[in-house]
Image 1 (cartoon, rainbow, N blue to C red):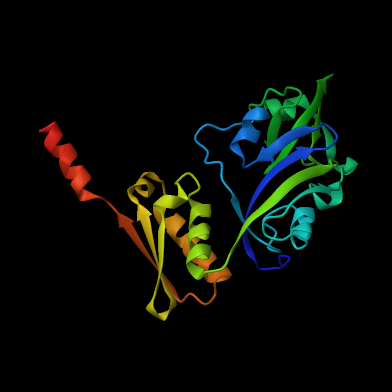
Image 2 (image 1 turned 30 degrees about the vertical axis):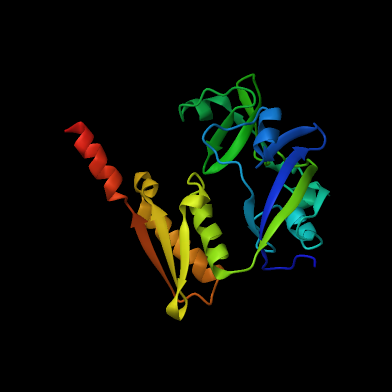
Length: 239
């Protein structure tokens, strides 16, 4: 049965720029290493997508509705459904002194931020700098090799993956989600989360997503598990 809008699915993917045959993103460790884009400390694993919610490029979101669980497909996404077409109006020439006044020494291919907008320096010379405010991948065709690993069916599975999305560096096996009476979700977080800055904001973000995407849930209860036996053993060893 093909996927439909609103489905919670886990996908694996490799994305590349067609014109350059260059891999730009993947959640498969072996592929990341092969493309020399491996990030130390990142967990390479299937990624949560809610079909039709715009969490991925428009072209990919549309094509997901044609896939079934377990299916793998190569999908070619044109610029207008990827990062947009290149717009010549977004290329500006400014005096170099305007950047130097901001403490920026421009270099070709350098990314700069001007008035809250990011741009790439395309050329420098004659006291002028050419800034390109187009997305770096504007005008490019993006090719995805994507596989639908699993469709999430239960409230617990969906809540767990929404939680993991907010704290991706914590292994999902360390998260425990229980559905209590009256459609209350209890989320047990490992001690690791205490090292995160603004843990309160993370919890509010998780609760907000659960409210939006799993509307039958009435409340969210958080528990942080701290194994005291391990802590006591450490203290005894130090003594």
